Length: 124
Image 1 (spheres, rainbow, N blue to C red):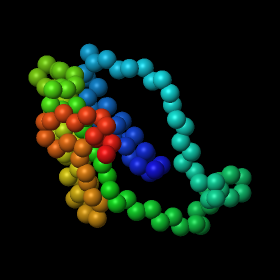
Image 2 (cartoon, one colour):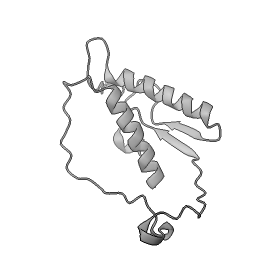
Image 3 (cartoon, rainbow, N blue to C red):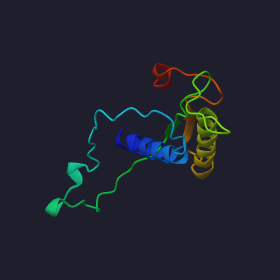
């Protein structure tokens, strides 16, 4: 769960940076922050330092990419583009990159064309 949250945060930060020029969009204020402890207490050694002698066997098997928006939810509108189109193109490029770089990883898109997917369906 921590690995998934970290990866989704990286993707979100990446996509946020790419579409930051849509400054006319309303961004709701952050109401709560969940602190994630990424260090496993079992692996802490002397002086609370990570014990690197323990081998971790994490295998990333599936990546879910959510481009957001789509269909009648266009997101922000720029001079010549809409956020829903930009986010879908970036999501597909990211998915193709992951597929090529990590062939054993399954990539799942919450949408792969210009359709609206309700939030509760994206989480399924």
